[in-house]
Length: 303
Image 1 (cartoon, rainbow, N blue to C red):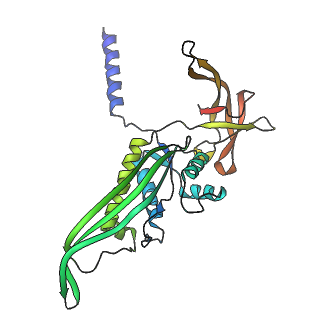
Image 2 (cartoon, rainbow, N blue to C red):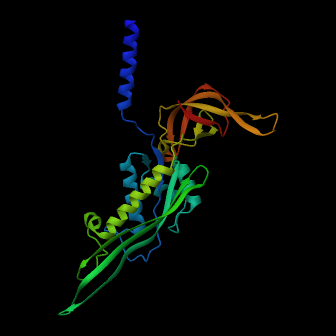
């Protein structure tokens, strides 16, 4: 009886411990492409970049801070866009985003366009010694068309227009600034606050609509030394020393009553170990540990 009480106490203690441990969510791999600027183009960020560039940069920072996403560096995106001769027009297409996302090993690409950015003004007043005075009402408006793209299927899993506005009224002289010398000056402005709210809304939408999933790795070919070449490398998190299992799609299962396909079981055909990173991190070479006769298209999964 004493032993049973002791065991029960241990189980309860373990349940309590695990209930208070922090839950670490699986990070979702995403790439954020520069948003297209569909506004008048009269405004530029303090570092001289366009509104679209600035907003996508803010989104990258916000996604990383949320700790729900692994966001790939802009330099990696730019390098692949240049290598593949994509995005020359400045606008990233659905097909471009999916292709680059696959090369990077990301699950989702985030693309978009800034459709509104600036101030509207109204109010009444007059002039005193040539200086315009009065009660003015300003409204800062920011709107972004945003899309989340599944890079494996090319499907748009979510699309929306995020629009935020901030209002201010009171005695004023002149008009609000549309150029800023620093990030702090921008953040303190009315349009800066509306922008921040729009970015925070996109992060909330990403948390809701972007789902975590396993990295899809496949065999490209077998080389002359008997090693296998994989379609993912360090850019996708495949590291030298990783031990991976190789699976092949088995016989299709057909329901004898309906004739409909029930899918196929995945058969394990071997084990490999990554020995080299290739092509700037976009592919890798692995040594065969167990099994053989690997084929192009065989699926590889982490241990």
